[in-house]
Image (cartoon, rainbow, N blue to C red; front, top):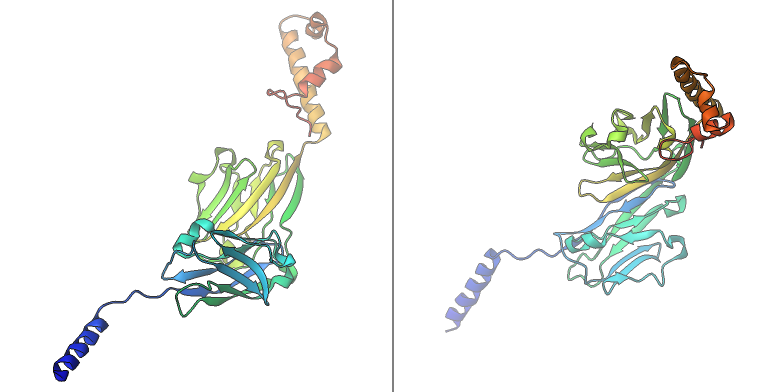
Amino acid sequence: MFRKLYLAVTTVLFISTLIPRTEQPKVIGSTVKAAVGEDVILPCHLDPPFNVTNLTVEWKFTGNLVHLYRSREDDLTDQHLNFKNRTSLFKDEMVKGNISLKLTNVTENDAGNYTCNVPKLESQVKRDIVTLTVVKGEERVDPNQQVEVEEGVESVQLPFRTTGDLPQDVRVEWTNNDNRMVHVYENGSDRPEEQDQVYRDRTEMKKDLLRTGDLSLTLKHPKVTDTGEYRCVVYNREGNYMRGKTVQLKVKDTENKTYSRCRDRTQDQDQNNANDGGDPTSLRAQQNIPLRAMQSNDNMDNNGDNVNT
């Protein structure tokens, strides 16, 4: 009797070892580098992927609360003042176990170890450490920088220098304030087919940009209409934001150039009248328009916008 029972239990235990068990998800963090003034993603995820939208996610730094998510929404009541308005989670990615934290406008004081924690996760590994290294000195950058040039120069550079040795599969996008695609770099090469026609054959990036971290953009033959905000964003292969920078570009038209344009157009009109056998000033006389008024009108473009900036 007991022998049969023993054999039965032993058989069940043996068979159970042959049945694959569902692996418990583990929280996994890693290290990341950023320069002062940049935005950065502190990477943390569950492996295998696990939906955490109904769980609590907690980020801490030296014992202080950086970000708290619970009851399907952010709870930033007790967030440390140093991180106010600087943190966010990727809510759409949490269903796949992505609990990475975006931290904006990095400072030297942000360097150190962050704890990524899912306290109610049914797992032996509910938390992990994410180490942020902040680059100092020469690589300090201003997240919002203004560049001014005059129309007619050969080119202008929109600067963005970040930490080097970026992954080979990142995507780099330069866009303007109208969300037009200015330049795209992906999988080791430029993507001119994704570029807006306005910028076709007018942009260029460094050849070894991923190794050096120099993501600056050269814009050739800048025009007054190019004035505006330009933003560079780096995405990882999953399409998640890694870092970015905004540059304000102002292209100025000179007074001499504006005057020359008005004078040339008036002279062309007078020449046309002369070729017709009339007085070069007859058109102005017939329309009773003073020369100054004509030049003022000539300062307007076809859309009624003043060409002076």
